[in-house]
Length: 101
Image (tube, rainbow, N blue to C red):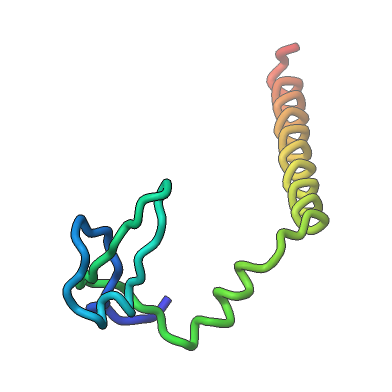
């Protein structure tokens, strides 16, 4: 993934009413159990993705395809069972050649 690290403003809970009107506009108060909770801004560093990554992110957030997942699981399970049977058969043949029963 490609992107850059930038400084961004985020809204964090505050114990007092913000003094600036733009903070109230950017981070409006909300109700928490019937009590008005105010917020203020804080500057943090964040990794911002490039807009070219939007298509791959949207594709990964699509609906889960159960049929495709079941097919992959079946293929994997069959491969593991087949590998076990080949290894077991090889062991039987090698033991037969060595003269062990």
